[in-house]
Amino acid sequence: MKYPMLAVLTAFSMSAYAAPAEWAGCYAGLNAGYGTGNNQWTTTFFNGAAYNDDAGSARSRGAIGGAQFGCDMQRANWVGGVQGMLDAADMNGDHHYANGTAQDTVTYETKALGTLAARVGFLVSPKTLVYAKAGWAWARNTYEDNAPDGTPPARFDKTQTRDGWLAGLGVEYRLTPSVSLLAEYNRIDLGKQSVHLDQKVGTGINDYRANIDQDLSSWLLGVNYRF
Image 1 (cartoon, rainbow, N blue to C red):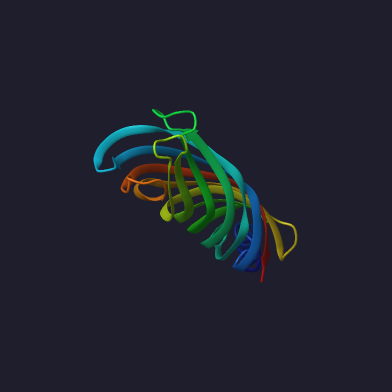
Image 2 (cartoon, rainbow, N blue to C red):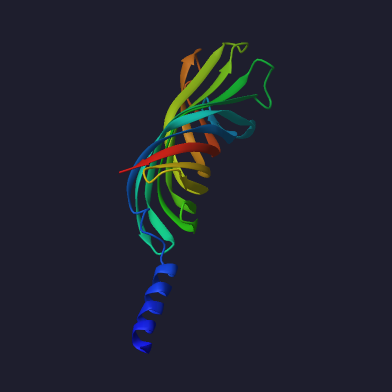
């Protein structure tokens, strides 16, 4: 008699420990939110002369929106996998050149973001996953220095894709077996990079290089469909 009872208790304890394997599989979805960026500009080479000139800094802000996709595996209450995101962005910021005139303006624009990250989470309930993510990110940016009141007037710009690391936190809630909602925060550090800006307006100045230090943050809401 004691052996059947032992088997029942063992089966019950195993079922109580292991969460249902409902999070394994792949998904795709949409996201939208808000992003900010910290941007620091230092001139390093200008018209044949080397500089160590702090041109100033600005915070960029704007909307973000796009799609995500990924696949998960599950072991008991732990869920892990990979996730990719591709978002359009409209994040803009500007400041006056630190030692320039009121018309001499530096601008930053982030047009797109992409990430590829590992995601690991814990099921705090069968329907609620709290997770962290870390991986690689890239951003498409346009940088510009415009001095319309110069002699001669000048404008320099550069559109460039740069990459760095990503870390994030989030929560995902299952509304139905196929549909879930998510909210997450991501931090992207693109580091400091030398940018060779192209001259668009003006003559006599043909070599402008700047070190631009940039990091980004995003706050996103989204929906996933699991298949």
